[in-house]
Length: 281
Length: 312
Image 1 (cartoon, rainbow over the protein chains, first blue to last red):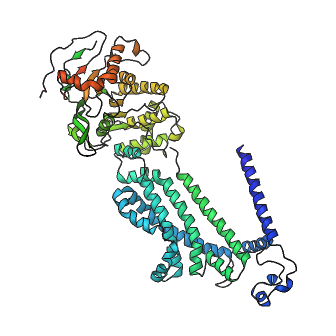
Image 2: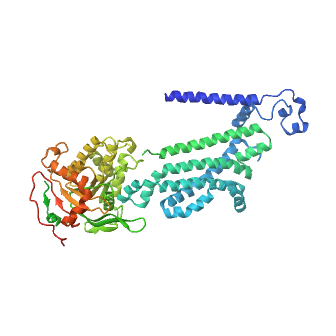
Image 3: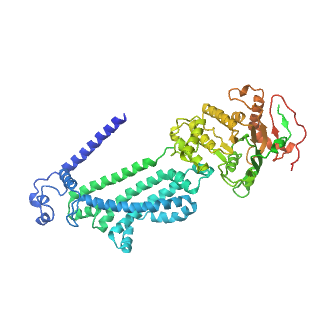
């Protein structure tokens, strides 16, 4: 029953995909009889095929497929600073995300633990967290550029700031809401504070902490594209912006698809990790 | 029917120092709009080594608070609990608690849950020694074969068994139980009561248990402490179990004293727990020595003299 459900779901998914690609294909079919209307200056700016006027500037599915294949065939080439393979650009972005996110986890989880353990600290820090949390991470960018004076590190800093809050809040919440009876068990067994933290509170709060980490990695991957559009130089966000300047929509669509894929892989990886620490009551 | 024994008749055995002594315990809450609400007050109760004491009372008389104070998880508004001549200041491995909910750590297996308690008690023990010790108590509660299951894979009765094994495995001086079987179905409850009785009699474990189940108290307890209704609850009387020591759940109801005892307890819970205040007005009441009653088929030595004034 379950197997036939997933089979039917897969068939439906493929059908929807085919429908979308079909609609896209028909929407971008070459228009006839418009050959003479193309402005030669425009033709000089855009690619030759668009200048022929038979096709819209928006690529067909086949074009994007070919572009995607071209990128995947040779993802790691370097031909100068402004022409590097999409794999290299993704690696730059992933590196920034992992460094910023890792640093945020190193700060947020221990700090969240302390905040969650102490109702006093919880209340004292709450206004700061509530005000800092809704700030768009990109708003920090000018401050980061001014103080750090390095665009690459500024991008990492922006990732750090945006990954911090969900992990901090979830850790504090998870630690603060450990069931009283489990703490009572630890108390009646005269368990020391460190052992209580690692054997009782941490495993009890782990699923909540993991949820925060999963939210954070999602936000970090969203923000890196925007951050790299601002700082430029390298990264998948810069690549998208660069291809916009080239008006290469095929490349942009390829990048969009790859951004989605990488984001999904990051999310699945953390979901798998979350399953390791999950428990049923 | 009742054989009322003069208060303080058990001063003889009390000369042997009680293992744990509840003295003048009270719990008060600030009342909304000034003043205080007293949940219970002037609760005095010595518990001797090897004794099984049940506390019965309606909800709201502060039963659980008394148990939590004994466990060191709660502080009284007044009074103390003395263990081995010293006032208790917090939780201790000497007083193991079996909670109402099983309160197992759900991310640990049965073995890990018990071992967590044992390594708290014996941090110097090697792993294989801890393991063997845990296995012994897992076997005692008949959970052999389920060592590596998580609590979520166990039935309610099995979870409570793990809780019992965890409490017994630290070999406490005293076992505290807060309505441990109230969440279980009747069949499971019966078999667990049998096991608790078997284990506690065999090991001469000192137990303080809260219940609102009369039959449970009659099967398990040597002494049944009756509390009046809250607020201002107090110990109304202490009923000594007049059923034979080797009683079995399957045949206690055939004993001559069974109905006398059961009716006495039932009468108390149904009516006297509410009207006790007027009862003591007539007879005088010493909270340090609440009346001791031994309900039986044949009345034995009914005491007619008035209760003594508070003794030294």
